[in-house]
Structures are given as C-alpha cells and as structure tokens.
Amino acid sequence: MKNSSSAVTNQILQVQSISVEALGTEFEVFYAEAGPPSGAVVIGIHGAPCTHNAFRGMVAPLVAAGYRVIIPNLPGNGVTDVDKKHIYNYTTPHKAAVVKGLIQALQIERVDMIFAHSMGGHVAARIASDPSSDGAVQSLCLICAHGASPPRLLRPMIIHRILTNCLYWLLHIPIVGQIIAKLLSPVFAATGFKGRNPRAEAISYYEGAHMDFPQFGRDCAALCQQKVPVLMLASSNDRVIQHSITEQTMSTLGMRLDDIKWYYKGQSQDQASCKGSTVSQAVMFDDGTHFILKKYPELLAKEIILFLQAITESVII
Image (tube, rainbow, N blue to C red; front, side):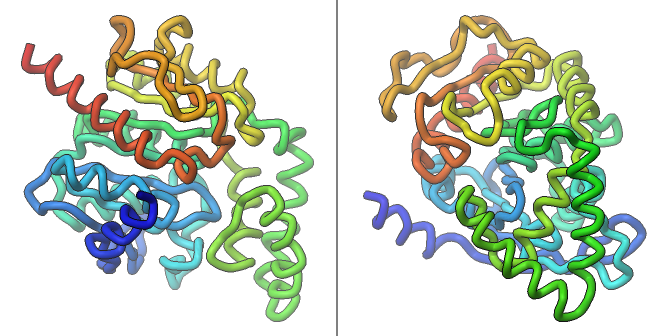
C-alpha cells in the first residue's frame, strides 16, 4: 500500500518555482503542488530542516478528496535559497512573510487549511492570527507542533541562543562552515532530523533556538478568540515536544482534554470525526514520536479531511 501511494504521489506532485516578493526583497520560492486547480486550497508548512517531502505520504489522499495541495519550501532548507540581500533571518515572522508572499503570488484568495509540522506550526499560527490576513485562512492543523514553552532540548534558551549565534557566524565562513556542518550532521541524524544537506541541518538548530515561544501562545489565544477551527495531531511519545507542552497548546486553543480522540497502534478508539462541541479538535497517537506524518500519513490525511468536512457541515447548518 505504501509503495502504491508513493508511486501515485510521484505522478501527481509537481515541484515548480515562482518569484515572490517579501520582506522588501525577492525570493525564488520552490513549491510542490498537486490536485485540481479549482479545488479547495490546503497549504503545508514544513519544519526544519525538512522540505516539502515531509508531507509526501499525505498528498495522495488529500488530492483524492478533491483538494489542491500546495507545499512551499522555506528558504535555507536546501531547495529555496535565501534572498540575495540576505535579509531573511530564519525567524517565524520572516517565514510567515515568505508564505504570505507565495499565497499572493499564486493569487490565492482563500486557504481552507494550513497544515504544519513542528516549527512550521508557529508559522501557520502567525499567518492565521494576523489581522492583515482578513480571514483568508479558514482553519489550521498543527502536527507535533512546538508550543508556547521551549522543549527540554532547547533549555535553557539563553545558552542555546548564544551557542547558535556563534554557530550561525561560523557557518558563513568558507570551508570552516562546511566542516562544522558535516561534523554536526550525525548528531541530527541520530535524533531523526535529517535535512537535505548538512548546512540546512545545522541552521535548523539556530532556527529552533530563536523561536518566539510566548508569541505562539499569544497567537493561539487570538485564534481561539477569533474562533478559527484548529485540528491538533500529536503523539504521546513525542521525544521532542513534551506532552505537557502539547496539552498547554490544546488548553490555550480552548480544547477540552476529555474530548481527545485517540489512536492506539494506528487503530482509532472513536470513529467520530469531532468529539465535543468545541471549534477545535485534538487527535492523539500513542506512538509515532515526533514524526507521525511519516508513520501514519494516510491517517493524518484522513483526520484532516474529516475535520474539513465537519467545518463545512457546521457552516451549512
């Protein structure tokens, strides 16, 4: 089944590029696209040091359901380059600006959902909660997303920021930067964070240490106040994002912990698409770690489709 799904994805997923204006400069953004041009738009935002390939297993089911899937490659991860002026600084606001620039360049007026993994969750929340978006983003899906508090891997934050500032400077030194990136690559591989190249992996450490966790909390609070539907997909054995952080995000978004839909070993214990009466919904897996989108891509796509259908039905009612 996985080989068949992969073959279908290879046939329908097209990678192309477009010139995007953002942050007062220009980017040649590479993005993957699949599905009917007239379909409802869903946009995927990857974490670091990943690319659009992080969502490959989810594409075919979404396209089969009639959605137009667009997955941009954020600058600096080995596909889309940073701008020639080097204004881009790998922070959440800059990532959000590039994604919004892509949406504008593609002349997309409505996004039915942004689904995002890991660090990408902060970017998705920033875009959807931004008043200037004027409600263009209809819903979110956060997949093993970072929360409003740094995970244990990034504590204490001040130490990691000092270390990554030094690393960032060293990576820009010819030859020296290449050597350091290659030396760090096995460390990232051991944690499951495999990037397109060693430099992207090293830069991802800098990205993580410079995330604005409190701002994400404020963005989630704004999403709750605006009643933007949010689907959370997470794993209880995530070794990167502690379960307490995930529960904190759920609470901020107005979700009831008693209404969580559970999967045990890939089997759902509740066939309902949405439990409870909240605008948002959480789905937990007892395994899959931080990379459930690799272990259960079809199930994640299924939950996204069910959630989008539930939103549509509630609007009609």
